[in-house]
Image (cartoon, rainbow, N blue to C red; front, side, top):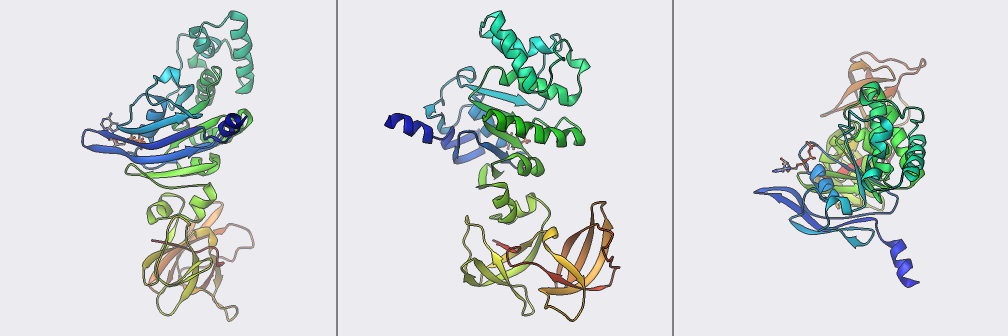
Length: 366
Ligand code: ATP
């Protein structure tokens, strides 16, 4: 019994001291990650940050230079890809054009020499799962991009892998289909409960779909956390700027508090700020005060409640759902987004304005 309890507490995927060098290039620095059973875990970062290399080491296409990789507690570092219990979906579908949908999905089962009745049952169940019942006779050229991606996913799910790897699976789709598939993949992943590792350079995909995100740059995992953590308490400027829109005001730490710190914005303006658990700051240290454009409230200047900053409208950009104001406040310039409601009082360039935000909205980033 103790062995069973131990197993249930094990992470699904573990990287232990894994690194990868190609000649003189360090693609992935020494990395430790523990991905939980059933978790949707994304690796997010710009081109060349090492996310695909990390995924390919897990899939078994590339051998790590150092370290071990475990799947459900089993060391798979030296196993070939087909023996790892891993299914992988790429952005370019990899559907056989000369086979219909049924045969494409059946392919892995035929290779595994399963009997006809089992194959029929499993393919039909998987078709239903991905919403393609009735499409079994179609060929690749008769499918939309989104349908092709469903077939590609079905081909992998039908062999019942322990771990699902998705390498930029939505990048070949148009924007609208990408939006739709984001939610669809997330739903299907949750309904099966399969541990999933997702690679993307698209922050909105990562924020929407993930239980946790690892933000990568230059071969390093800079921060690992929930979408809320990563967006609301980034641990560095790189992350603050890579994810979402950000204002980063030049500031310096004046004192530490229970909830973070107080920062000085110059000209005697002191404001509270939170700090990511992943970093520490010290009094006197220069930091950026991160204020997301949607966290700031903008009002025409008036003699009421004391604002955190005062300034003037520089310009306004119409964005449909939002109006985006640029505001100059002393030595700072920041962008403020206002939901575009009919009652919105629009402010012309030059209008004196007051800026307000809650104590939780500002984050000090080193
Ligand atoms: P992209 O989104 O562009 O695929 P990525 O974040 O997935 O980028 P990787 O493909 O993992 O990044 O590449 C990480 C680094 O390793 C890059 O500097 C890349 O040039 C290098 N690299 C990747 N594969 C090889 C290889 N086979 N040989 C030599 N260098 C490689």
